[in-house]
Amino acid sequence: MLKKNLLALPIALAVAGVAYASSGMLPEDALEMQIKKTNNSTYLTQSPQNLMMMPDNPAWEVAEAGEKLFKQARGPKNASLEKCDFGKGPGVLEGAHAELPRYFADTGKVMDLDTRLVHCMKTLQGFTNDDPAIKQKHGSKSDMMKLQTYIGSKSSGMPWNPPMNHPLEKAMRDAGEVMFYRRSGTMDFNCATCHTQTGKRIRASVLPNVYEPADWTKAISWPAHRTSHEEVRSSQHRVLECLWQMRYPNIKIGSDASIAMISFWTDAARGEPAIVPDLKR
Amino acid sequence: MFKKTPIAAVAAVSMLLIAGGCSATNAGKTEAAKPMAAAPAAAVPAAPAKVDYTKMSAKDLAEYLIFETDSYDLKQATQEGTSGKARLTQDEIQKACSLMKGEELSDKAREKVMALAAASIKYPAGGIKLGDWKKGRELAWSGFGYRTAHNPDDHSNREAGGNCYNCHQLATDRTGGDLGPSLTNYGKYRGASEDMLKYTYDVIYNAHAYFACTSMPRIGASGVLNQQQIADVMAYLFDPNSPVNK
Image 1 (cartoon, rainbow over the protein chains, first blue to last red):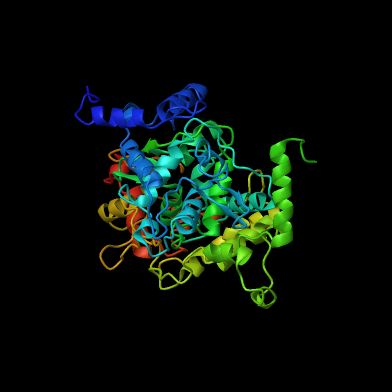
Image 2 (image 1 turned 60 degrees about the vertical axis):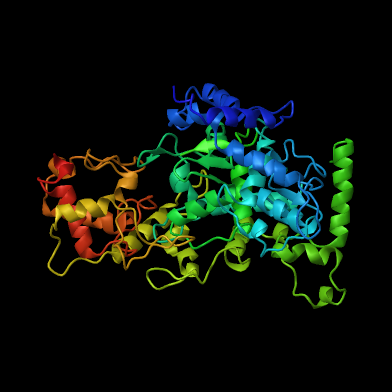
């Protein structure tokens, strides 16, 4: 059996070490639920290998490292992130990621997981934009991805529910929707080119449809370990890569345009369970 | 109105506090947090009028976010010698074809798009001829070219491809996508009449001439492939010896 490799045991222990809120669900269970709900959708079931590997997702090691980092006193202010407010109160991580992006009164901005985490690392820990802890955005070895994977995992199985109570949350989501359909670049692509039909493929890859929330939740469930990259990737990285394929210029991580797009795409999965960390192609 | 729950009450109070303290805007980038609490008083009247995202239409805000908020690297160099800003700036066809969910193209807009597209098509001086299907095969397969963002394609090392297989099945020896129609046996089924060659050239060059607001990139009009490369791809489609027709 593939699963009986040497890596499986320590990873299984790592999984056991990450605590769940009672309302949470392991990502593989949340995914299994979606597969049943969609009657084995082509998108969700396209990689039997990844489905089988879910319990041994290498992202769990990254999440575990993130938990240590989160609780560790770090930075010029020698503080942990345990007082960081991700929208559900200081230190409350359970379900927080499922309700991002959201408006934060202390900054007057709609923030996603990346920008809120950066905010806390600056304000609580005293890091600056030039510190590797903040600057290094990509890769499983980066602090950002370790922390995001840990925080994200605390929303696994919980329904996406980004608040739309503040007018700014609605404005950002609506602008993100316009951007989803806005065609430009060398190839005239918009997001809708690839993401408004069910079961269609780019080469061999089955594409998720924004109009199928039960499928779409997997598409927006980040952080996820990408087997083709051998790295854990973020929502912001997904934006970047799509835009790269679309022949758009570089988008800045945490920029308002990126948050508007993430607001729209998260809203499109409303009510469906987050699958975090996910395992993707 | 607000539901009578403690959470809503807290939210309402905090919203009032915000409304009193500053305008609701996401425009301040990473530094936006500072003016809230600690900005010198003099900076407030001196600052230019703050843009309130909530006062803009969704379309206006989208344009604003793309071009005015330092979200994109608008100065990024492109392979064609333009800028990131040019890549993001829509031409008439892109504007007309940015249809939201459920939005239909009007007849007038359709005519305009088709006319613009037809006018964009430039034909080879010696007429439309088939090139080398083997070169066409590689161009059809290659998804390289014109990508910028975090990992720009270097065209000095490798020519840009046509990206055809991303969306089309062509020969069956490689896996193609299915966002576009299957083109397997393209020449075998259609023949290589002059009309068929012209139609095919047009669709590759600028498919909007026939299918307004198609998803098909304007491979010729946008400069993805030149006339010779299009001839090579057409040979791949039409040549009886091409794997497409086997």
